[in-house]
Structures are given as C-alpha cells and as structure tokens.
Image (cartoon, rainbow, N blue to C red; front, side):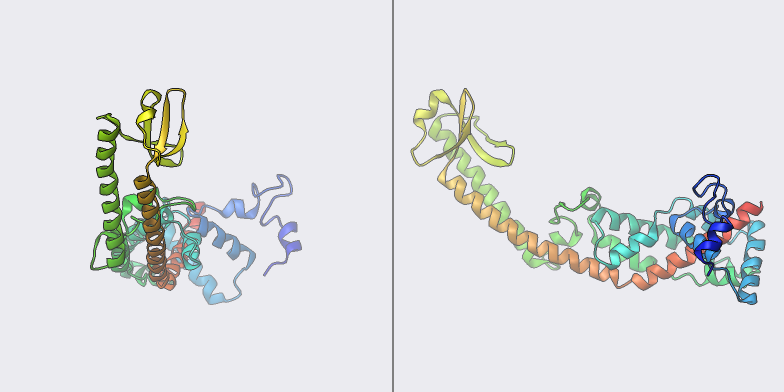
Length: 313
C-alpha cells in the first residue's frame, strides 16, 4: 500500500497542476469502460503487487489483449454499456433496491450471462492462464436470472421509482391464486367494492334526475357527487357536503363514505401483503449475492486488464 504522501508526491491519483485527476498517473492509465472497473484500477495502482508470479500473470494477460483475441472481444464490447453493477448488487444485499433498479440489474446480468457463455466457449484458445480463468470459469447465472425476470411484472417495475411506489402489481404472481391466494382474494374484494360504487351511482342518478352524472375527483378526494346549485334542494339531508364551486356543490352519500372506508381497509391489507411478498422476492434475489459479486469482480478485473492494453495500442 502506497501511503498518502507518496500518492501525492508522485501525482498518482491527482495532479498538482490541475488539482484533479487530469494528467495524473491514474488519468494516463485509465481506459476502463465501467464505474466498478475504474474503482478497481485505482485500487490496483495504490496497492501494487508484490508477487512476481501475479505480476507476470497480469503482464501476460495485457500482452495477449493487445492482440484483441476473439475470446475476449465479446466481453470488451459488453463492458461499454454496463451500469454500475457493483453498487446495484450491494443495494440488493441490503434490501435498498427499488423495483426499476432491480429490473435493470437483472436485465444487465442476463445480457452478461449470454455474452459470457459465448466467450467461455472460446476461452481454451487463450494463452494467458489468468484470462482463461476469468472468462472460462465465469459463473453461468442465466437460468437463475431468467427465473427472477419471469417473476417480475416488467411494466410495473419500470414505473416504480424512488420510495413512494405502488407494490400491488410488481410481481407477475399477484394475479395467480396458486402463488398468492390472499392477495388475489383481496383484489377481488376491491373489484366488488368498485362494482358496488358503480351500482350506487345509478341510484344517485335516478334520485337527483341527472342521467349522465359521474363521480368526480378533486385532488385526493374521490367519488364526489357534483350537483348543480339549482338541484341542491333535491339532495337528501344525510349527504355530507365536501366542497363546492360557484355553480356546483360536491357531496358524499353515506353509502359512498362506507364503501370508501371499506376500500381503504382492503388496500391497507393489500399493501402489507404485497410489501411482504416483494421483500420475500428481494430476499430470494439476495441469496444469489455471492454469485452476482463473483461475476462483477471478474468483469472488473477484465476491465482493468483491457485498460492498459487499450493505452498500449
């Protein structure tokens, strides 16, 4: 390990002239394609090898990569478009990964698995033992990842960002009574409430003699019955006035209030069940953390080996 003073004096990580990475040793050698590869390269430079054999192994690998061997080309092309897999995998491990991030990560790993399998078939042609090991022994996660991707509702996951997302549609199994019977049952009850709400609207139309009356929503208040001021006299006394305008008054009937509360209770139960199911799914994905990390580490090392080969060219 080079101490901080040595790193500063030799301008390894930053240049005195620019005050940043530009024109430093790292800047000169850094041609990595991924964020995690770039971090590993900095670690390598700050922690030079002491083992002669490991130095020679890296040297042989870089020397062979300069010739652009066919077995390495698919990996080189793959690295250019990869997100920061290392940090995304860590977020999964700690249960902090949003659905859209998880979907993007699994899709990236699915792409990696396909390319890695293609490269592994040609790995025996490589002269470098280090490259043969990194590429030829890459874990094949294609079946595991395909299983996870099948469980996710892709459209819902893509729309679920940040912290306040709805989890009721995140897993494809939420529509299967065999997989999540309680969730399916609650969703059916919500539909029944919606049907009751719709049926009640027909009764209200007849009562106030407005055949085209529809429920209105204002901000977060839904199922409002909007009555023209000229017909307010026809409104029963047990209706609750919520708000109004110069020309209309908006009400909730006792039936609407009861159904709204019923629906809120059902959604609260659904939220709990769907949240538990999603956490369970994240937990199953996290069980593959070791395999994911293994793949990321191999890709990071390959990225670091490609870097000096690119500089040498």
